Length: 78
Image 1: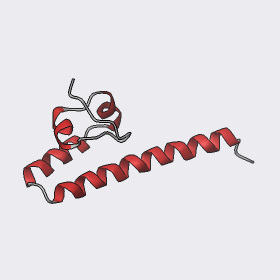
Image 2 (image 1 turned 45 degrees about the vertical axis):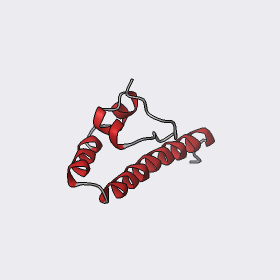
Image 3 (image 1 turned 180 degrees about the vertical axis):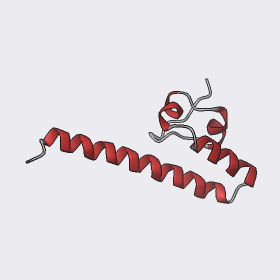
Image 4 (image 1 turned 90 degrees about the vertical axis):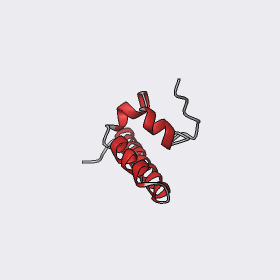
């Protein structure tokens, strides 16, 4: 059976978003390799949050560590 095109596209889009988030988190951890262990530990704590809640309301530690969101816009703690 052939998959309808709109479903195929949606699946690809979801996969892309997932991969981009994964890559983004990896980059952040790499960036932290040079920083202190305490900050790295903080980063892993923020990574354990579900991603959906991070986007709606980033915790303070995430605002400190990541100066930009995945869209490239600056995060504001307010």
